[in-house]
Amino acid sequence: MTLEGRPTVSTAGKPTGPGMPSFGWKLADGQVAAVLTYVRNSGGLAAPAVAVDEVAATRRSLTERAEH
Image 1 (cartoon, helix red, strand yellow):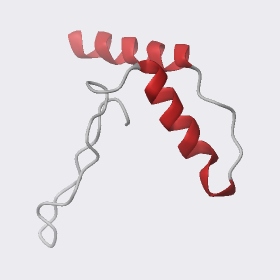
Image 2 (cartoon, one colour; image 1 turned 30 degrees about the vertical axis):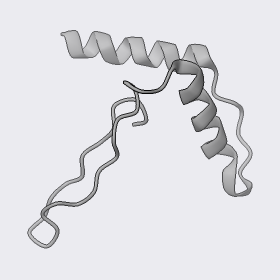
Image 3 (cartoon, rainbow, N blue to C red; image 1 turned 180 degrees about the vertical axis):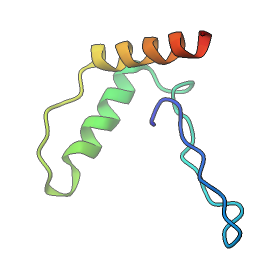
């Protein structure tokens, strides 16, 4: 979601809800990993850090999927 963003589903009651913007075009893999690590550990949660190579692999996978 951080890399590609997500639109919201519009309904009759809320035809133009806010969406999650894409940050893949703006942030490098290390920056995405840092943001996700921060989010995963905020609010008292404790989760392992997100590795830069995981972000890079996900970005490659998304690019390959879009090309097909």
